[in-house]
Length: 386
Figure 1 (spheres, rainbow, N blue to C red):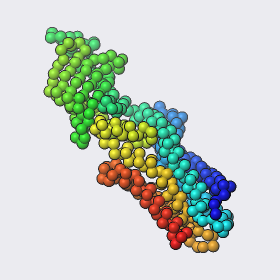
Figure 2 (figure 1 turned 180 degrees about the vertical axis):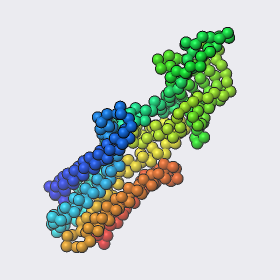
Figure 3 (figure 1 turned 90 degrees about the vertical axis):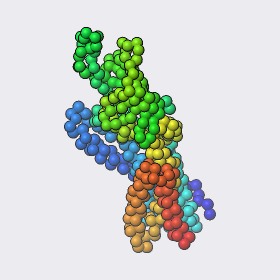
Figure 4 (figure 1 turned 30 degrees about the vertical axis):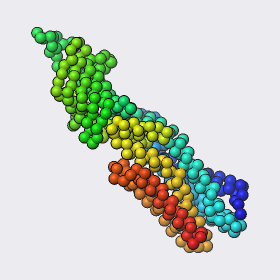
């Protein structure tokens, strides 16, 4: 017997309603906890208003909510099947000659569509909100003035520095300024290639500017290494604004507050990258010399979401469709909740291994979804056909 369109639509609509209600409830809870945490972080910053805190929590909401999506799919499916079983609706459907695989089909189809929507629509929109959250966090909480970007031409960064004030100083007998006064300014730093893991940057250009955007000098170097609080450059040519002939130096140091972790985290945050831009950005990172393993794991994890959601449906069905007359239903539901949290920690653990290149990115991203799918499929085959 084929499942009628009316019954398929009823099952799909009932599951969609439960999925939306549970997702909204989880998002409201996440928003509340994020707001409290941001209020705690902003307690010693009186210039940060409550409205800005609420806005930051709203911008952060899509990033954290996407981590909770598998739980929403699992728990809403468990509640749906439990309700249908408790009201004997599934029992009537099965008594009419329909198998569990038939009435699971509409719910599985909704899970697949939801996974595709998260991958192609929710994730790109969420990445825009995450970028806005990062901007507000840097400007309001961390007060970070450094800006970093990566393109096919290499690494670009802007950092604040203190420059020697030569405008108001009286020159000495040899024409050099005597003032040691330091004034704020900034530099634009560019490197065309990065050699990992020693963090050796090649073909360096550094442009010095005042706060009023007046150009002061240009520095070229063959290579540079980021050490503690300095960029150490070798084989340097310095072009001062007032000099015709450049000055050559063997070594040159540029003070910096950046660390290697700051640079990596600034442009390799997976949640701030749209699904559609990830492949090109991964290629750009690898061409430049940076490690793109975190982004590659994140990209394949997004691709595996439809399979993960199908696995959640199968696991939910295997633990929540027990007839009311049979005992042990509550223990099975508790087991399903435990499996959900186990999957979450397993997924994070394998992704950490993939990020550190201890296992391939494909294995790290796809194995949790595949393992859950096989477990759910085995449980359903045992319940229905075993």
